[in-house]
Length: 213
Image (cartoon, rainbow, N blue to C red):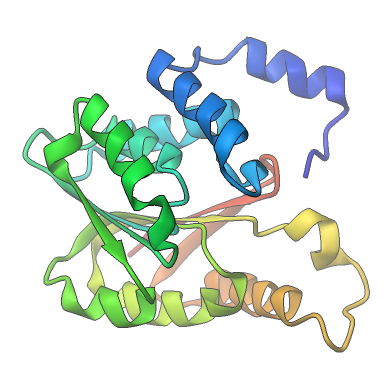
């Protein structure tokens, strides 16, 4: 997932904003207690998400893929005081851990958790979004895009994680690799969609920023 030389990557991290103490605690607990801790956004990408959110200053945020809540807390840093962040995850076992850290933050009452299939849940949220972060099951990325574009405010931002997919996007596609196939389709859709302006950043495993016209 790291495409830069390690020393350059380390330099970039050291010369970026420090990770808040609460997120450090969440990182430690995730690594101690939860399967697949590498799914965390982590210090560097978390600060990128925070910075983008602060630039957008969104009122309504949608996150698809909560995991342990790290990225939600980063995105909430830029949210308006009366804003709301809706975050969706399929794994109900992580609900209490997420809520614990949401309540320890300044954003507990502004973060709404949803458990279940995002494809089914998103249409039930009666809001237009200013900022969306997609970091969930890759096979459904194209479906998520189809659902959310019409639910975005003009000028809204869609952030998409893992769009380089450990470099598999530039390797020969295997017949049974449905995740990579979905990411390739998704990346093409982002770049050719008539309502989007898109730039793909080679940050960690790839982060795409798409602006709704």
